[in-house]
Length: 345
Image (tube, rainbow, N blue to C red; front, side, top):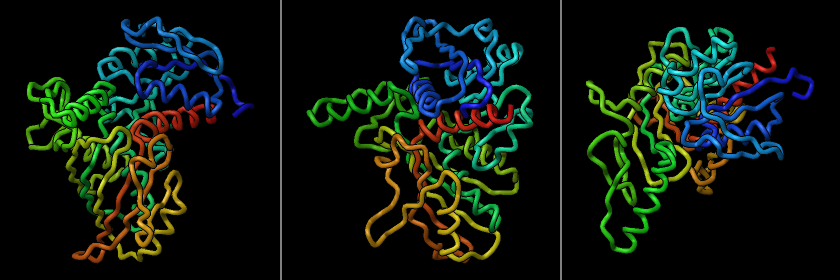
């Protein structure tokens, strides 16, 4: 991208886990940056971050911070995005938002580049990054949708604690040592920081991510349902999800059952996955090769394996999908969108 125009770029939430990944990817990918502005809450302002050998002081994010900014990548929570993204757009920035603030807004494209890259062109200043668990699933299912059509998806997720933030990682590590030492565990964060009841995550699984909705599903589960239909541009796809927090640091894993509209051959599905953008097929049961969260951590791809025909439905397919929730599930997806914008301009 060396011949491209250079852009004034802002990263909001620069000191958070996703923000740090975004900054690292902008450097690694040699994104065409004229000026990089790093923004955060007042609490983190003043922190120094090194980018391409230069120290940048993190500033407090305010509406006026976006003067002259052309591309702004937001990853600082939904309230921050709601407050500041419109202000950034008013000042001429294109915002790539990694929160839930605008995902289901009909005027905001919800984009996974491997699935619906053209939707970016419909933006009115804001482009939404989908939920991490949705991103990896639709990236793997898009080739199947194009070839066979999809009528139904049943997904169960096994989601890493990093999806709940750095404090959740610390809590899991602390609880693990407490259990091993025979001390009593006092959960403080998971499953949901804002709710009164907390559960142990060390040596446990918690079948709750985000708050329960009136229909008995959690918000995380409903995000997967709604976002999948929007990204794949098909309201007729039936989607049901069960989202579970597991004691893993990085990498969400998903067991996905998909019912196709047309008959398929397993070998054809394998070839589709081998040739699909952003997908790495790891599917060799004879040698115990399948996607693992530990091996996906730090990598940008979505890993697919355990491909097998359903035993009760001729058009049913079972698969196992794994990806680093902070990389493809957040930072890398956002940087891919930014790269598309840079090329288009």
